[in-house]
Image (cartoon, rainbow, N blue to C red; front, top):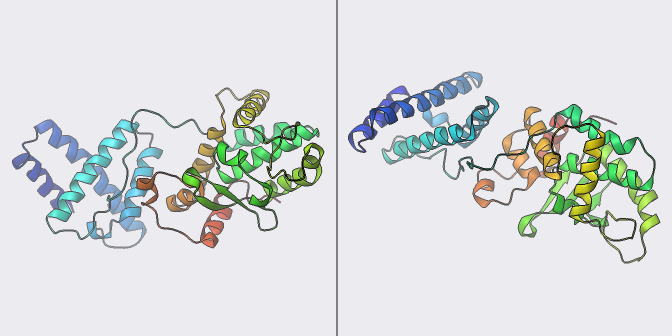
Length: 304
């Protein structure tokens, strides 16, 4: 494997005319990739080889870089080095498939929002739970559902009554481009939503034809702005010293799922990313597999 890297570096020197500093940067990045590949092969008890380094291996490598707190620009550079190397390997006939094909490099510039810790999420959700007012009961159901599903705020406020399957603990939501997906939710979130539907929502419904799941006191569908303000107030009450938005809960969901042992493809399925180049990275999983992964990984799924 190291010989292949040296062959690639020689190609960059002779054919591309890269400078010595650039070659050393490539050498360092690809050596790190090599060490990761060797460790992964050892864990799986297989012979280390580039043939055994597949797309999932590359995604795991990228996650490893992120977990080691490398800057986004550094991760992007290391991914670019890997892409160039594997493209060379394919063109030389040393590999049949490029494990970085359709793997998007990290976007440099706009950082992801900070994720809340599990204890901070608990603090946040417990704020409305301290009260028994109709508003508070609705708000707890919304916060539980946001964290249970990783939904976008626009997806949550767009939910209708028929989109929540309480008995089977699933919610149907429509992402960007009206793409539908079914997301499992943990039992506690299903319970709080069910209580809201049965005991709170009827107090505010003015029209029998109203389909919206979450309403305001005027009997109208709750807006994105309304939810943002509600969340902001509870974050302040919880003493959270960081800006908390609905997307913070979505990011926290993804972070906690990954740290809990979920594989990247399952989290991709659950989040319903709209970026085609990103979604193509992952293999479509059956709902049952996603459900099993979810129950093993989500920190609140084991609560009764």
